[in-house]
Length: 449
Figure 1 (cartoon, rainbow, N blue to C red):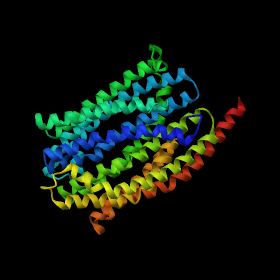
Figure 2: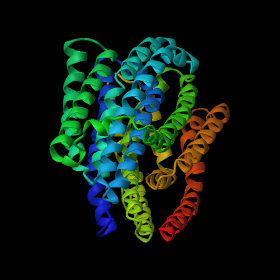
Figure 3: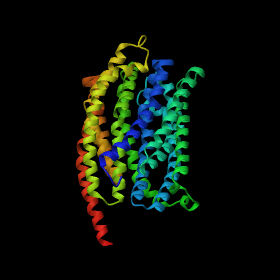
Figure 4: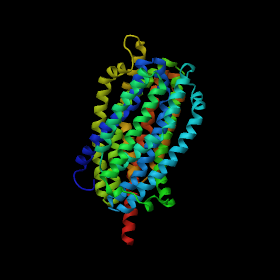
């Protein structure tokens, strides 16, 4: 991404990434659709009640591995293949130990956390079974996200898409098998998800070995480099924690939703699944600008970095308009994918539609978050993503606690949009400050050579 049209490069990079991330949403969507259709509303609510905790660990995996790939991207942009390979090796090692620690910790905390957010008693056991299964299999999404991030770091966004399509189809087949043929209920859909993610991770890994000789590892590459591991965590952990911090806010909102009963939990769960489909476009744009910024930072081309951010901003505005329009047309038909129209209380669908159409009006601020937070991470900043995440968390907590008592369900619906406004409003200023500071540091370093 260091040469050629910034718009064309990011667009071509984003298209397969967009398709892939939409299919990645199917992992959780199919789980919810299958249990909603074939097990019942209570099972749907049970899976939905864990969304905040799922987001916490899966988001942690995405943020961590995206941060790890920043160093790979920068060294690739600088044509420093030896150190790029070493960064890749240490990313594999760090990902392994991180997944073990996080899996064990959250498996033990699962039930206490569900009780802490006052999960309704009629769904808490199912929610616990589902989320523990996801925690135990955390190593699968961590490695899939690592290998796909590494492929994207060198400009290959098509291959992860192909592997994700394969695993998505497998996930659908296994979901149906473990719920209809072998009636495992909520455990079945979680187990199917883990198996599918393992397949996608393995496909990515063996493809990297076959296609990219520059990533062939030797024993010396796998020798533990404490300094490099520290650098990887210095960039990866803030990115991981930013997702986890945001997830805490989501969990607090979930606690507020739980107080309205299982039907509202079900409506909110379906609404958030549709929200995730509509907002993938912003996540993809963030990944594109992160890779673009990282490679051009490695090449020392700050003029091109600024131009890229300007182009990405215009792309984000277009994405916002498209997402808002889609929210008003696809929400109702999508909602009926999750439940039986003839047997479901119409209020569940109405509350779902109200949620999606309300939050869509604030998508511009969510776009700012993904553009500038992820872009700054690509430039090597761990602090700016963390500041943004803490701001978003604080706003979400305040609104989730204060507004439901006054506005009822609307108060819960507004919790996330108001948090987007708070975090998104400050990020452009943080970016402009950081890019100037980084360029001055780079020029000072060059003048000393």
